[in-house]
Amino acid sequence: MKTLHTDVAIIGTGTAGMNAYRAAKAAGKRALVIESGVYGTTCARVGCMPSKLLIAAGEAAHAIGEAPGFGVYVDGPTRIEGKEVMHRVRTERDRFVGFILDAVESYPEEDKLRGFARFVSDTVLEVDDHTRVEAKAVVIATGSAPVIIDKFKAAGDRLIVNDDVFDWQDLPRRVVVFGPGVIGIELGQALSRLGVEVRVFGLGSLLSGLTDPPVRDSALKIFQSEFYLDTDAKVHDIRRVGDEVEVTFEDLEGQTRTERFDYLLAATGRKPNVGGLGLENTSAKLDERGVPEFDRTTMQIGKTPIFIAGDANNTVPLLHEASDEGRIAGQNAANFPKVEPGLRRAPIAVVFCDPQVMVVGAGYSKLEEGSFVTGEVDFGDQGRSRVMRKNRGLLHVYADKRTGRFLGAEMIGPTAEHMAHLLAWSLQQNLTVAQMLDMPFYHPVVEEGLRTALRGAQAALDAARPADAAQAAA
Image 1: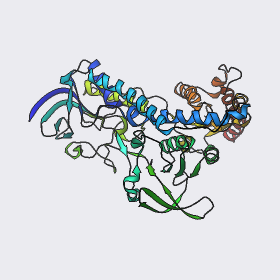
Image 2 (image 1 turned 135 degrees about the vertical axis):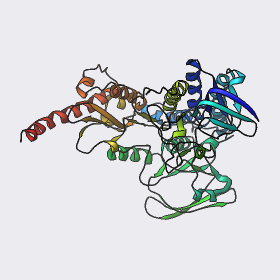
Image 3 (image 1 turned 120 degrees about the vertical axis):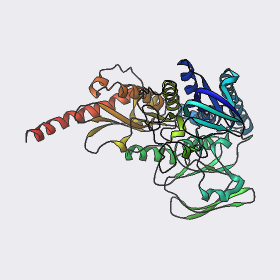
Image 4 (image 1 turned 90 degrees about the horizontal axis):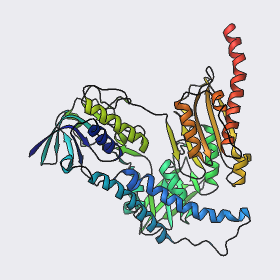
């Protein structure tokens, strides 16, 4: 076994690992990336980009169906060629992955090591049975993997995860999706729009990360108008029958039904890839899931020279968060033992369904009851939304009752991805609702709906202040 010495050892070459490597090198330190799997980020291979390609195909098909609403007609039925759809998905996916591969290939050969790394101590790693790595600091950036519930395993090889979808050669006929979170709703709706018969099952009424009951209810009604969705499903049995998976469940009317599908798509979350790393050989303190406890502002695990970034820390599995965390972890690993907080941006999350879903801030469920007011707009009568025939959805904005500061928002509606950015920037700048209303709003744009919601929040703030003053005087 040979021995290598480095300033920073980085386990994993996904988004977080690559950003950690760049940060460590920018600090003038030696850095070594260690990878046991294929190069290429989760986003490029099986996440953000291929899913958006499938969604884009679904939106194209859906637009044809919506055209008669504008008085525009296409002669004959819409024809969807599944093989061509999936060929484009795979081809463009491979193009995005190619950019990542090019980036990793540009690293000096002495900065790359293939194999599975395992901790011997806080700063010593063994990679397979061929290399011992002695580092001054280590960054864990091992990503995550889909969660597979034991009950699903009865489907045998009809059980798939989102990773598998993007290697399809053709579109299937019927798919049952478990998990109406980001992945399940995005893929479920896209497949439905591409002619696949889809059923989406969930538990506990969870839906796309929404926690504000009226907004969540609006989303539920919108999705159920397009495809089968039960967010509190009662599934009695799953079994493999021939080349299909058979599912027995209670439908939305309470009737027991048995149906067969080509695939069972498990979209029930992801778990951090920290098993087998030998963390028990370090001084890291682990939580009940076996994930190291760490400081979110520095990415440091306790007081150790070990840092953790990206999906591996099981907090916010989003690319922009992984990028920031990797940079912070790489900088602090390079400068250890000098560790400083890095910039953590305002929380923002978007689901690329149609209408889109977004959450800015910690979300409704994290707000203290009675401490905030809500402003609302229903997009049913919003001008620009009606022009585009995209007038569905609901936006709630939240403001601190005492200070008037904007706290966040939850939304399902048109162009939510753009609205989310405006609101996240406002949140990060600690703007009040009054200050946000001083900003320009063009006409006619969907953002005028945001202004309506902000006006509602400001009216609620104005109404609350006399009551608060009277209570304080008493």
